[in-house]
Length: 223
Length: 223
Picture (cartoon, chains in turn blue, brown):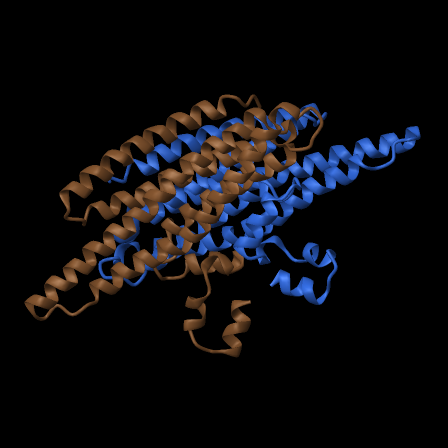
């Protein structure tokens, strides 16, 4: 799709106007592998969470309406709905994460010849870094929710698709930890002490929670 | 792209002729979430491994040619090359996994009225299940290799992209465990005892190896 557009309009800008989620899987993989820093681990974390949400939605959909699923119908409908809503957030975050990183790079390249320029540049870098921290923080928080949704499909969903729910739990947990790596590396260059303290506390809680819940949720699978 | 083709040729078969990796990310996510069993956790495992390989390739590419990278140049070139080769295998496996599963379903639907039909049906199911086991086994074995490649980029790659290497390690490890869940569920319905024994032994080794190596490889990151 992108290749065709590029043939028709041979301007690199075309590629940038297209959202990452509109690329084919092959194109997205190539774009990661290329010698540019974005998209990188942050966007991959968001995609991992989106894949997890889709798996939870799939198992819920494969449970609803099946014989013997009467007592979990409503719960599975709610899982499918929540998973869809979160998936859409993650899809946006694939781009948001890369854009936030690029904004920091743009700020770093601002002129810093005069005192005023230097101050402006530093402010832009710092606010860019905060945004580049808050995007993966939101991904991590939402991905924990997807762990719970996928976990529900493991215990209450269609038994034939139990491994799909399990893969969902693991992909969501990987999304949490991957997003938090990106948070932590940004905290190293942020100067606002109160911001660092608040986020660091949340990071520790989310990390512990993700590790603990993964163990518990997967313990329901006997393979 | 697929939507356009479907408008032009309103036959469902169009969708099946297009490889999953040719779908956009959004389309792939929708296809997982739909009420069909494929693509599911097996294809997601292969994609997770492909994403990990792309991250390893990216960090290697961002290291090659950079100042001070003289002594790791050759190693990073080898990492980029190996990661690219494995990524292409994973991209094929995204489809192979779904196709193998669909072949089992097709076999299950074969007629079983006569004794000969029953025997043929059972043979087709069993050979289908073996193929559906060997595809994720290969993904798991290759994904362990990607863990090592991503691990090398963490210790020897560009320090600015250390979290991308770390996310690569985690996505590759998740690919290993996810693929192995799919192996284990298939083993439950395979009847060839020798096959089960051999694969089960390999599964245990791969699982332990993945968990152990993840700990070791990520211990090199201080964030």
